[in-house]
Amino acid sequence: MSSEVTVFSDRPEAREAMAALLGRAPACPGADVAVVAYGGALPAAALRHCVERLGRSYRVLVVLPEGAAGQVPDLLRAGALGFVGAHCEEQEFFAALAVVARGAVYVAADARQALTAAPAPAAVPAPQPASGLTPREREVLCWIANGYTHSQTARRMGLSCATVDTYVKRIRAKLEVRNKAELTRKAMEFGLVGQEPVPAVAAA
Image (cartoon, rainbow, N blue to C red; front, side):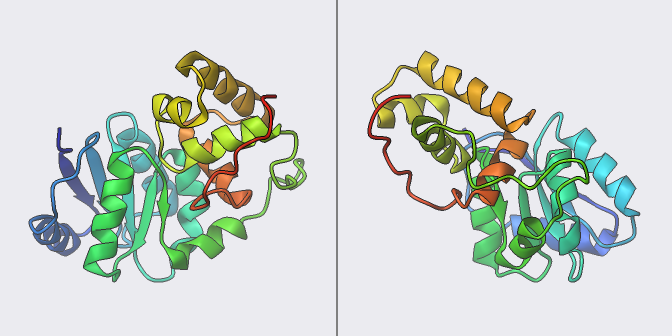
């Protein structure tokens, strides 16, 4: 089933431009997507609140103006899954839309630096690459963070879906994350997004 895409914006001209772009977008399967075309009129706190609210009903793709990439870490924690620039190429926007519709994270190249450079909270030391995860857990995290469902991950790893569910629960507990967006952010910090999973030698 193709996803429905709804545009939200703080500027009418941005909403109209995005609606025209979506009129040329190919159909993409997945959940419904909210495209937040941020024009800079809303304060950062209001934008975060908007993303949090929309994230309850949609998968959220944020279109950011130049100079706003620093908001990516905070908006990812708020529940957004995708980030592109307002002047990105049409094909990149369509690619981001398809990734977000299937529940994976897409961060445009110009926004990744803001994400990886985001400081850890003062009382929490920066994590070591995939520290605390077994090889099997690391492999599961890699599949999930790259947009594969639990059942698809189970087939690729030769496991039952219940076993993958158990691994994901362990990973979330170890990394202290609450949702898929936070889980994927951790995977990006570990360099696992966009990387082919390395099969573990033996089950953990």
